[in-house]
Image 1 (cartoon, rainbow, N blue to C red):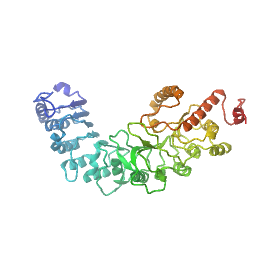
Image 2 (cartoon, one colour; image 1 turned 90 degrees about the horizontal axis):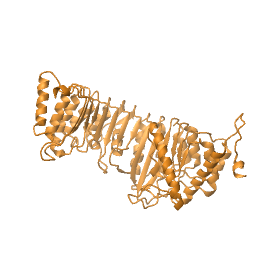
Image 3 (cartoon, rainbow, N blue to C red; image 1 turned 120 degrees about the vertical axis):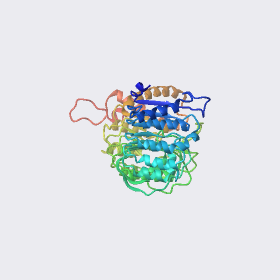
Image 4 (tube, rainbow, N blue to C red; image 1 turned 90 degrees about the vertical axis):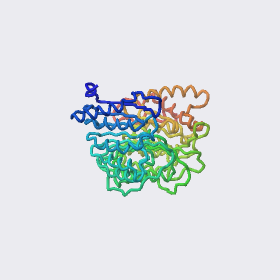
Length: 514
């Protein structure tokens, strides 16, 4: 055993203990014996796990946590520690957590700690030993990445340490309850210099952002895959966006989705995303809000106009992905129509994005398509050619019947041959994968399109269970425009005649006869 323990670099111990099953899968004396061996080796000046760098532990009772402490002390090169959800009684180990936290804080090279289990830590409120021990662990000099349950925001000591932690680079707060907890209020520090990644539920995220006036290095904010989603209010969303705009000047990725209840009503009239104009390095902006049983109209500040969008993106030159959606959530039935929201933004917004954001590849924003706007765009010189967009979705926005041909001509001039047009709603908004996954995603979309064409014979398009398909008129107009685009591209190129070329270019008159 001693020979092999010296070669171990990663140890995964999933413990059970007598608290959850009859007997002990390791033997009743295994853990005490292991602790004794570790102690004897340390007395002789040798460690049992001299090369161990990663420890993954799951234990429910006090004996198992004591063993975990001994292994940490016997691993001088330990860099990562993960505590998984135990299978035993979590109350059996509550009293042992303060000691374990102190042991983790004493590990000199430890850089990553995952305590994001539902049962980890125990109570961390004011005056608790676990709360004080965790606050010391957070300020550990070498600690770069930390994962915690989001109930730690109730501790004044913990929130003060998070706000003042100068070395921490990545922070994740796991959410395990739908209720909004009241976070501890602490004095705000001047700045947080190294935190670059924050993943948390809305409450945990807002609590951390409120702890400092400026986050000098924060580039990523997300609440994706961090546990249970919380139902928020309109005013909560507005407050959160204000904090982001004021405190995150170098933000590059904002990925935020939540359920929203209508009461109390939002009192603001300005565009909710307007504060994000200060984040001049924005590359990915995704805001998805789902309303449970909507009765009242969407607040004016959440239904932007063309001028609202133009002011916001005027400095977003690096923007690559834009997704903004407000829809209704119909629960598991999927038997209710989508939210009847008529977007105030028009095709002018798409033109503004194509002019200001030359690297934009995905545009998912609700728009109202009117024939007069398209005619004005096609007749003017403001429409750029061959933009970088590869995916365009108006989220079921209304399309006038007499705007179909103009929309086809507009998109042909604006985009490249490989662009994908889509009429769907929020069920198809998950397009934030890394670049290496895009090819696989495009293949899946092609298979879905083939299935959709088969279902068109019955007059319906397949949609996810969460929403019903949009009205046939909008979908039919969109598909008519898409068919016209595909037909034209297969025939001949379209656009302005090049300065010197023998290629014959089609004009509107060649296609439509007028």
